[in-house]
Image (tube, rainbow, N blue to C red; front, side, top):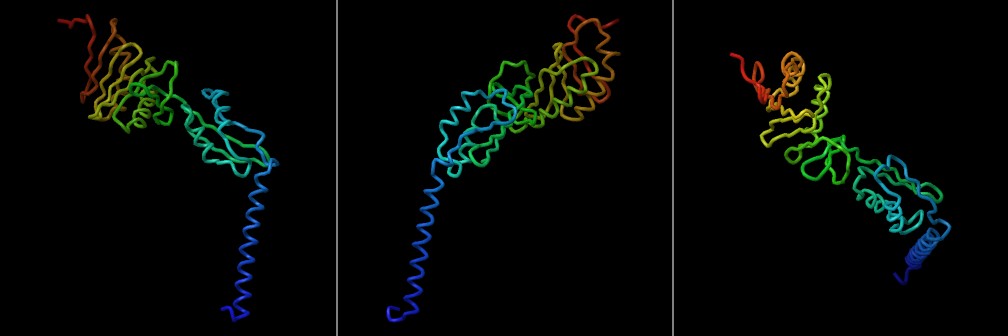
Length: 235
């Protein structure tokens, strides 16, 4: 090769190209780290009812880099660790701004012993003093329970009753607790239809009694059973 001018020229060109590429890389790296590209503004959008200014400032203090070098994924991860945050998008806005769009969880009910479930049926960890219904069920059933809670609530709304508790057992049997203390057993099949039939007959049956009904069993094919404290059967 050393005796071949052609090979030597090719090697020289390759070395020159590599050197130029290294210099260009160094120049670009130095250029994008100039104070000229420092981030000077953070714009936070979305519902932030549960996110405080202190929490945002804490995340800002952890940010390292400028417009080009900032780890966008890391910033997104920091925001998503906040208890009430469901989803976050982060993007750069030329020349000095970072745009953060936050979607918060909207609590639908309490779930299990110490968690919450949102309007999508997703379970999340957070705390609130709000008065919320209580839902429970086997692991992975939160979406089903949240969906049925909404359906049951709409069904009972015309008779003035509100669902406070929904329980789905391991055997997939449903039980409701209402605002007047009534417990309704729905069973495992045709729950929505059974509850709809009960609501249609409510005023002529349970709603007509002068005593409070504390238990209704709808797991019968052609009727339902009630338990009324102090009510005596007629002769």
